[in-house]
Image (cartoon, rainbow, N blue to C red; front, side):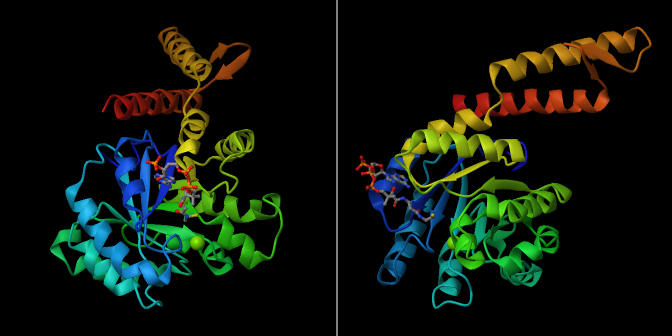
Length: 288
Ligand code: COA
Ligand code: MG
């Protein structure tokens, strides 16, 4: 499936070191998985997690879910070995942590170019450092780029900020860059994984900003994100009425329709069609 046509409402991190969680994820209703070798895996477990993850991905069973592998950075002791082990199984996407500039992506792209197994592998960037945020537009334009993942915990640490509001410029700079270059863009995690109301509120906020979905740390968060980032029945119904009214207006030689007291022009019809396409993509993923 084209990465832009598929839903990314829920993007669940799974530590590459946890066999039970890796197995459980095969049946969870998450749109995408980030198989993690970076911060969810301790230094002592890195080598074992890398081997376990390569074996697990090779066995497959994740169906229609998008699969990203977060490797360690190339400035660490583990990044090169992670890429070697994971590249061998021809992964759909590599997620690079702490991206600072387009050069980081170009270097990874060259490594992928050098291997036949990774001919179609895309690159996603963790956007989680002040330098990375400032360079978002250049990073988004780099080779093989398919998506941004907001790393809000690292970003808050580096900004020395205390609220999500203090990160809004960073979130919006990444959204601007992602939209300018046709990338998927998913919001950061909500750490209090037992707080459902708090998660729902943050999902709604991320959706209204324009994110495609939210990264998650626990299976209990999946349904909340799936609901928040899916078009609601009301939105689908309105989209249908807007399209019908606009087509009727065109037949009558008009360029503008009115629905519920608001004008509907061709750009609104584009949005309405995108809403229906998203609902269909979700239905097809849920049927699979
Ligand atoms: N993906 C898949 N399955 C997961 C999971 C995840 N991220 N987190 C928990 N589970 C599974 C557990 O294996 C357990 O399965 P079981 O019932 O078959 O044993 C079940 O969900 C319930 O887990 P629970 O006991 O509620 O959670 P926990 O206390 O074991 O773990 C965390 C809580 C936060 C430590 C754990 O969810 C986790 O490691 N999350 C990912 C953290 C991460 O990746 N961080 C990096 C990015 S921020
Ligand atoms: Mg991080």
